[in-house]
Structure formats: structure tokens, C-alpha cells
Length: 258
Image (tube, rainbow, N blue to C red; front, top):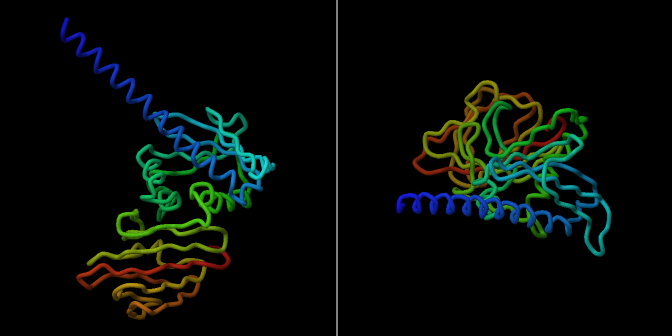
């Protein structure tokens, strides 16, 4: 009899815990919806879904209409009835974004299309976005998942993910502009995979800490704090850290194809 009570108590605790997490998930998502109502970018209509595995699904409808001093942004349970794109976010990642420990674009960042990410965007069955619609998703992700004005992007050693061989934080992406911060630890090698050594757009690498070694079009180079290296489109480049301290650089990718 006593053991049965213990089992029932454990079940009740687990059910209550799951309900609490589900409610917390909804509260976090609603906090972004509430914030986006005040965002000037909410004047452009956008409808999408949010899926948090084992916690629930939601639809966000940015109508593009004014509601008093704010914009109308509606939140409802379940995925959209009409196919569109969906953010799939693991619960710990959603909490980390909510707490400012990582930003949404960094959570989605990857070197190759097949790479794992704890936050991703997928298209619902029947939704075939145009190139123009696809180009809008990255800047929209930044504005929706970054609260407050002006929008502030913190970055540091504990706010990164790994891609291209080192740790990174994405600042901002939109068509024609990609910006990120890289932290290269001792002995790490960046872009040593031949598939990622030549990009179809110009790149500026801005040294902000330490000295990183590299090659650009086969020429050996060093990038130190206070220096910037320009890399033309389709030029092969790779980097590595020979020092005993982490080096840091800001990456600015721009122009046609970025």
C-alpha cells in the first residue's frame, strides 16, 4: 500500500512538472509575441509556427495591422492551418535564448545544410517559399527572437556554438550581409574543410584579440588585433591558432551571394 502511494506521488509530480514546463514554454513564447507588438518590423505581415518537442506547438500571426500604439501579433495553440515555415526549438535552447545565454541565429548556425542545430526552420508540407520569402526569414528571426529596443546582441565565450572548426556567435544575417564573432582556441583549425574555403562573396576578417595564422589564396598571413584582412570572392582561405591563448575576430560577409 505504501509503495503504491509512493508511485502515485511520483506520477503526480511528473505530471505536474510536465505541466509546469509546458506552461513555462507558452509563457516564454508569449513574451516574444508581446515584445514584437512594439517592434517597427511588425508592420510587415508574417505567419509562422513554433514547435517545441514534447512541449507543444503554436501559431504566430503578425497581421501587419495597427492595434492602438502597437502592432497586432496573435498567438494561438497548434501549427498553422495554412502551410508555412516552422521554428523547431529544443526546450533547453528556448530557455537559453530567453535567458540571453545564446541568440536565435547562433542556435540555427551551421557549416553545412545537413548539420545538426538545436533550433531550425522547416517548411510544412505544401509550403514552397519563393527565394524572396526565404531571404526574409533570417532578418525576421533576428527581430522576432531579440527583445527590446535598441536590439542588443551579447557575445562571449559562453554564448557560442561550434561550426567551421571553432566557436561562433552570429550577430545578424540578411540578404547581402552576414556578420559573426569567432573565438579560436589554441590548436583549433578554422575552415580546413575544402568545401568551405572559398565563398562566392567578399569577406572582411577583423582581428580583435591575439594573432591568428592563416593562408589566403595560398599566401601565408597573420591577423592580429587591430588588423583587417579583405578576402575577395572565390578565394581560398583557412585559419588556425598557434598561440596558447584564444584569438578572436569579427567576420563580415557581404555583397551578392551573401
